Length: 251
Image 1: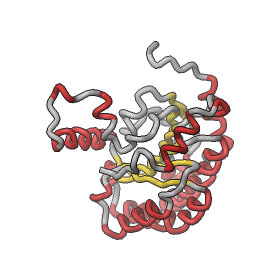
Image 2: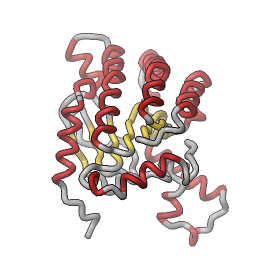
Image 3: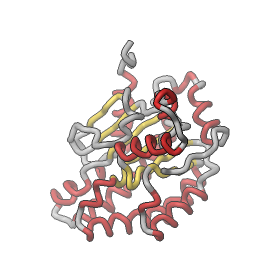
């Protein structure tokens, strides 16, 4: 299971401060994004799918910057699901190479911007070289206090819940000990607010096994644009849509 920082670390202080700030009341604290449509973007342009994935990687940076500007405290992006291993070996290799290059290129900017990077997923299943690059980025950005960037890589919402159950069993908890709070404390995102807004690009309207527990009461925003075309203006539209919603949480 992905490691999490201590409850009194800079990440928590940044999130707690945003929760107390009335100026950010209409801004979602936690935005999750399913970045869909890279391959279709490439096919419609008659270019290799690898070019679509590269364009998708390039599209992340301006969204991270806009999220910071708008006061979002946690941004979670779905980079690679455990189901994605079923794709062709060439495509998987391309995705891994793009991840490694993006980490090397983008980490210095994230450090300067005060963004703390965290991995959501089963990092122990990754190859050693990929794991080393991720661990280096986590270490170098650990002091960031302006925003948390969760990168869901080798991630599955169902697998996360399985990991939570395994954690409970390892700790010897009895059935009577199991509560929602106990389970939530063992999630990859244990010390972070639940998802307020979940955005999916590419036109499909499903959440594809992403943050199933955390997004239980999230507002959903579906955008027809493919991820490489999802720019800061489109992100602003999603935030404006969120601000118009009336969140009742079953009340």
